[in-house]
View 1 (cartoon, rainbow, N blue to C red):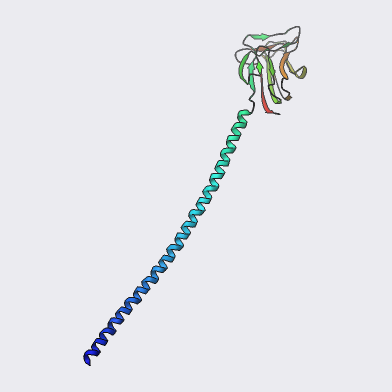
View 2 (spheres, rainbow, N blue to C red):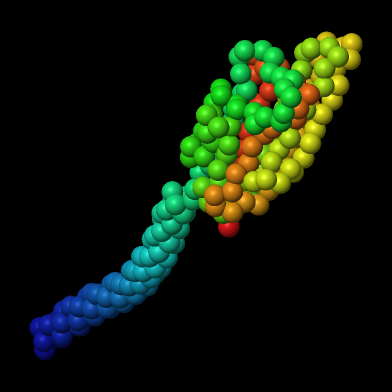
Length: 216
């Protein structure tokens, strides 16, 4: 009988050990399950973050593509926009005039002639496109007891007459500027009235300039 009780006690002890082991295993399984739940949550968070970053990248790529298209369009518009500008000095010869009749001043020293709308041979600017243009001129005279003047014409219309008299000072100069709307083919030029003189040399004292502000 004693031997049987010993076996029972041994089995009971082994069962307790096995129970403790099973409990420990169950606890480990639960811990692993909790770890897996945390990992799954972190994985879901990471996947959501990746998805959000992908969406943001798609938005940025769309905006970048739109910006590149806008830049390309602006480049095309700028390339198609007419470019017109000129600036010229009168002469290196010194005194011009006075004459008995009004003459067209031929500004022969071309500094800039983008668009080739100004002719140094005739002194005439011809508008290549309909638009709004800016013109500026300066006339200069060094001779005493001499009138100096400049007339700016739009086609046959006198737009402005500027003049001064050099009595006993070293020189006089007159400047003026106008913004004029021109049709394609309209002409603008400078004239010297009869009885007036101007002076120019390598210092480019008497000049005529113009440029297109914008086409219409």
